[in-house]
Figure 1 (spheres, rainbow, N blue to C red):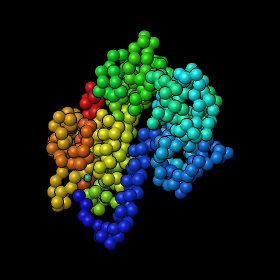
Figure 2: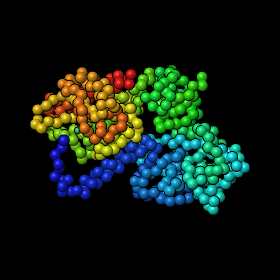
Figure 3: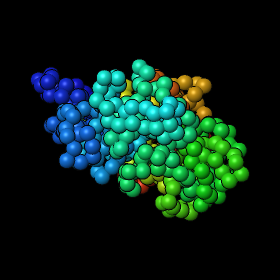
Figure 4: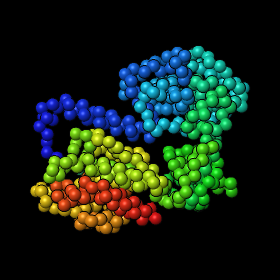
Length: 440
Ligand SMILES: [Zn+2]
């Protein structure tokens, strides 16, 4: 717990600003995972095509969030509010993890279909597509489909086309684009496994049963995408799902010589407690809890990433992040495990010592809590066991989640461990081993 800070009372506007900035930064991080970008310059022109030579069709202001449809020549094709589509320069936006969303393929079933600038019959005509032509459909509304058309977009009446379940890999009208740098899923024709023991599962998640196991360097036909999983077909005709981060799409093929485990297919959300103006509890030397939660999370993240897991952090720097977005991230990603790291504090200095593993839901969290605590027991600090804890990050979490108090920050003995990188490494080892057992 932290003491109320006097300056908060004196400067409430500053606190609100901190919170807004913190939430904003967090939202950027979260949304980036969902192929969205945030405008970083004060005003950005939205253009009709990927280059400065294209006419502007509007402007976007700082902080505005947009969905990315595709990427070309350092420009992002984005969906704007009101369903308009335009292009923004990538260097004017904040983005870390852009890859295009999976769109659908449609075939023109009428003799021809007019492609129009917007979704009504009186809007300017951009051109015409003919029976049998294939189109990538971006969006549908009120009887109209928004489609890619000559590296831009247009609208056709939905009743003149037929949407197939085919992945948009063979879209003829897209051949004019030459975006070799594009990470669009529409470019993926096959994927190659990076690891031995990669599993083909019946659904897009680690909880689904697996029917096939592949060795590294196995080529699979790409069929579709579901969140962060690829639907694929092997050479024997078996179809199922593989985690996107354990395979390499199409030509690129960097084989990593290690074995896939269930952990390597899992999405783990790591939550470093506190951050920014929320400093957490204090050590006897007035060091902040937030510093060591982040260091410990970094050590855990490194370990889990090395094991191939899809690791997502609720914060990766000293930023304020509110409580609600932390479990929300876990829910949104359908994380296989959510682990929050904190350090305890007793009323008086040097009054208490040791580690505690907290869970909230008996049915959902206890097996994760036990698996982790069984390893945490082996750490040099006394283990206080597995306890029920009514914490918001656990309470609002729909995914298996735990909160680990990895020592008392206001115990001199514990703080010597907490602040040492060797203890942080040991915590990482324990979490890694615990998760290995949990996902067995
Ligand atoms: Zn804390």
